[in-house]
Amino acid sequence: MVKVAPFFVEAAWLTVRISFLALALGLVLAGLGAAARLSRHPVLAAIGTVYVSVFRGTPALIQLFVLYFGGPQVGINLDPFAAGVIGLGVNIGAYMTETIRGALLSVDRGQAEAARSLGLSRFQALRKVVLPQAARLMIRPLGVNAIALIKGSALVSAISVVELTYTAQRYIGSTYKPFEMFAIAAALYLLVIHATARAIAWIDGRFAVR
Image (cartoon, rainbow, N blue to C red; front, side, top):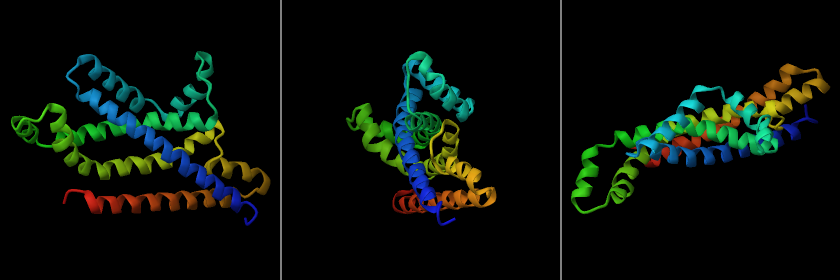
């Protein structure tokens, strides 16, 4: 166990990195997706709807396979790490799109209309009145998405990313101890998720609406 411990720690760090980068990408896509879904332009609204429907309606593992194994057929050649980040990011972005859209819609429309009546443009009303309130409402559901992403990061082991699940599978062959290897991986996942949950709770405590 002592001999494999450094490899599991390294794999846990890789899991954190890939989850963080995928979350960052997902947030960007979610912001764009929510803007598209709420747009008055029918083409943009349709693009946002298709994005959410496709990536929420198909398995994340299939999306990873299409990107990593099918990508070279259309000129997209990605290493496993990049494919994992992009695949997970695009997938979680579709879920967070609806989280952000729901938070924006939950803010009383009358407040935006009042801001407009005071001379603010539609964009200024969104930035100064709607977004600050919606952002506080997003914290908990986005935190749930972040935790789901960390757990879902195990899927990238299927495209040979050497994260926790892949590392556990690799050392089963040399140690013949599947229970112990997967128990170590599970403990490290739990540690990462617990730290993430504590961070989300701290942010929520400072900024969330009570």
